[in-house]
Image (cartoon, rainbow, N blue to C red; front, side, top):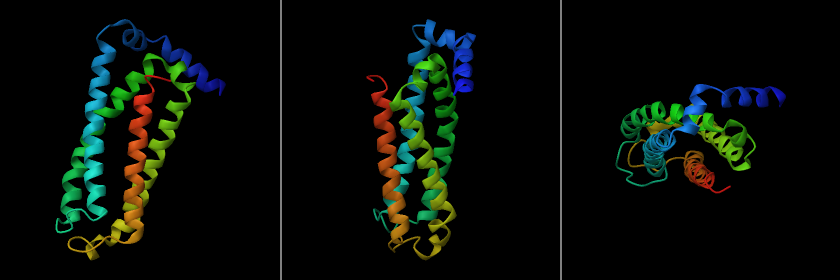
Length: 162
C-alpha cells in the first residue's frame, strides 16, 4: 500500500489536482460531465438489461444491443476522464473512503458480469433474439447488472456524505 499512498501523494501535488481543488467552477463542471455521461451509460445498460429480462420481447435484442452499445461506449469517453479528474482532486481522501473503494469493487464486478454475459449467454442470442424469453442465466446476469448499477449510483451519491 505504500506505493499507492506515494502515488496518491504525488497526484495531489500536480497542477491538475491543485486546479480541481482551487477553482470554484472546475470541480462542479467536471462532476456534471461525469454525471451526464454516467446517466447515458446506465440508461443504455438499463434498457438493454430490461429487454433481456423480458420487456418489449418483440424488439430484436441484437439490433437494440448494437444501438445502445454505441451510446454506452461513447459515454465512457466522458465518464472515465471526468472520474479520473474528480479522483485527482483528493486522491488520498478517496482511497481512504470505504464507499469509494466499494464503488470501485462494484464497477469491476459490473464489468466482469458484462464480459461474462457477452462471452457466454449472449453468444446464443440468435435463439432468443425476438419473441422468446432469454435463458435463465442471461436473465440472472441482467438482473445482477441492474442491481450493480443501482449500487454504483448509490455509492457515487453517498461519496458526498461519507
